[in-house]
Amino acid sequence: MSRVFEKIYVLFRMNILIFVLLAVTVIALFAYQNGLDVIEPLYLHDYPYLMAETDSADGGASAVKLSRTDSSIIVDYELKEGYAYPYVGVKIFLGDGKTRGKDLSRFDSIFVWVKPRGEGTVRLYMRGYDSTFSRPGDETSLKFNEIEFFPLEETYPAVFVPQEFRVAGWWVAQNEINVHKARVDLSNVPLIEIQTGTNAPLGYGTLEIKGLCFKGKKIEKEELATALVALWFITFFVILVIRFFDYSRERAANKKKREELEKNLRALEIEKSEYEKSSKEDPLTGCLNRAGFSSVLMREQENLSKNDSPVSFVILDIDHFKQVNDTYGHIVGDEVLVNLAKLIQSKIRNTDALVRWGGEEFVILCGDTPIQNAQFLAEKLRMAIENTQLIKQQKITCSFGIAEMIAGEDPKRLFERADKALYASKENGRNRVTSATFRHTR
Amino acid sequence: MLLAFLILLLSSCAKKEPEVDFKPVQIHWNLAEGEDESQMPRKDNCVILLTGRLMGEAPVQSSQAGELSYEVTISRSTNNPETLEFRGICADLSMADAPECRWSATCDADLKIVVKFDNGD
Image 1 (cartoon, each protein chain N blue to C red):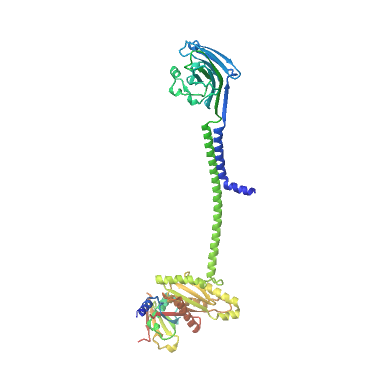
Image 2 (image 1 turned 60 degrees about the vertical axis):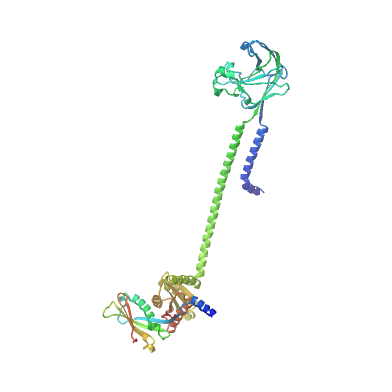
């Protein structure tokens, strides 16, 4: 069973990896879309670091009174003439309240529960500290990231995204801030101010502020994208490595298989050539047999017809061979055949073919040899055989018949002529050479 | 008529085997008395060339005998030892008067062969 799983694993592991990767990606995106939220509420009813503020610092005469309930703070105020833009509000300190505040840049939504008891807008300032232009201890140098809105009468909070904030133009001008620094920055907010707005009417009014809430994601979109891209990259790298090892293993296996096949092929070729050789060879003497002779004859015929190269045919027969067999037995007879073949092989050229024609008859096919040369060769062989002790029991002689091949002639006729010449040698007393001279009658 | 012509045409165009007349010939080479083979460096070449030449000679080709067998004597010329002299006679003495049965030949240092049939006209 486990083997089946192993096979399935081997077959599909790449697909499994890709499937897992896709699943992780989808789950991650889904989780990001529908979860992974970070919510940080800031309820003011029990928040200690806050204080009321009025325009008295700017020369105004407005008055304010701050009180707490179980769920909110109540800001009762009276806006009076004095300062050109009379206001009151609440300062909420974050962090140390001066230089090290809270990083709100990772939140994508800001909820504000402000319930007015009067008319007019409300201003929300996210005051940012930036060491390049902010001066420690000087609140006016904190950047004015502001938004002004009409609070709702209902209990629902007003919701803002950081992109809706802007930096107050008067503050930029007053502090001569570089344009590149004059954009909204919520990365270090030590102070939040909630004030009455620009159009707040003079007189009494109340703001009920429940608090603020910051909502963001545990990881940022860029971080998620980077993580997913890294995951895909690593996975494909792993796949690549696995593929590489698979390929190496496969290549080694293929190489081994190919080597085995080549080895088998070589063995088969050797076997084939040995078989072919043995099928064309006489097993006793090692000479060609008739099957082997056919291919040599065809080659020589072609040579004759194409190049007009003469081909001669020498047939020889051991004299009184039957008598040798009958007297000394077949083993001695075989010895004669073997020794005779060896002797002839040693006397003829490599290009000549020695064939055991059958029984005690041999044929020598001499390429590029006219009849007179074949006759000379036969005479030499005859004398060599006569003068060699092929077997110790008695002297062996041979009779020869020679014929030259004529272009276009049926090989049967050639054999016929050589055979007749051999017959003449036998008839005239054996141990002699007879050539079949020829002339064209037509 | 047309059919006969076609048959004649086809038969004349057909590839035919050459018709060959052949005669078994034996040549037995013997050194003359007192001759030494080692003194005849060109003997083998002369024998081969003479064999070929003899087989092609008209008296041999047109011999009435079923087969021919020659006894050939080889000797060096007394005038020029480099030239070999061959004398051939038929082994069958009953044919001794036939034109092809008695011949003499020479083979000089340049392997030039001259054959003369002595029973000829």
